[in-house]
Length: 343
Ligand code: XUL
Ligand code: MN
Image 1 (cartoon, rainbow, N blue to C red):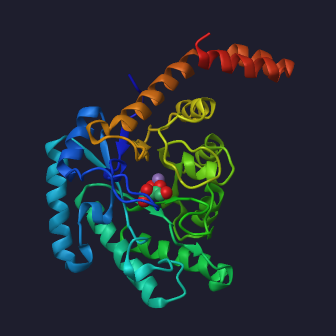
Image 2 (tube, rainbow, N blue to C red):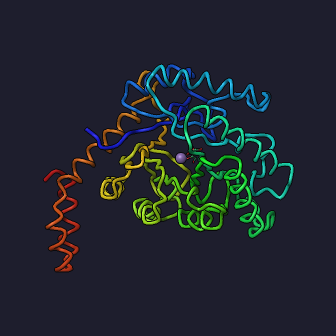
């Protein structure tokens, strides 16, 4: 049994297309996916705004809310909650050069329209979290944006979201690159900095994705710890990543078991979830995976979290203390390796 509640986004089960090849698996309907998610033991669904309300640009504000209410009924049918809504600006024709940090007022206005609608959708889905993955908020060409102005625009945009609704919380999901070359908000430290600049820092926190930290060359468990120390780790996207290359969204623990162990350990030790937070997954099945078994990466990731929770329970804190006092970190390291190998 896990002490955590798990969440997943519908994009975690996808058709397998990548930057160099077309899709390889048939689409699965939203309802079929969430039915299966519920059977697999997930408690909540993560949404992009247009996962909940497709073609929302063509709809009025009232129509968007009405569509969102239909999604809420589906969630209720399978006893699922909504964890967050994230405006999907990076696929839109209006925001080729980013939204909040675009140098074009028209683009920034569109980004705000989608953000307000995301808040409307979140309210209909009975959730209070907006996630900003700042996909194109940075530069492809360094000289194309003023980075100081860009960050100021980002702070202004978040302030407008906070003003729009008194209960909504904004979680920034940092990522150093891809699709952008240089992000204006690459790490959780930047997220904490931006939070402190807003009109209500108590409502601006972070969502840490393992792979994004690894892409920045830093340790995901330490990134989680940093946000935890500010009481601002309000979400995680557990997954794995083989080094600093394209974003892989591999199954949690599939590359680095020790790093997976320490991520689960920092979450357990700090009682993550005590305020209702979910352990979120953001994993993609390999393109080679056949449709018959295209949920396996989710099952595997949850299993690794649970197995690591067991390892945390077995972790000998007295022995850790002794080795720290002796400054015998070679012994401590070997102890962890043997623990993970089951020796
Ligand atoms: C992209 C990524 C996104 C966000 C949600 O790297 O992680 O899927 O988690 O928009
Ligand atoms: Mn993510």
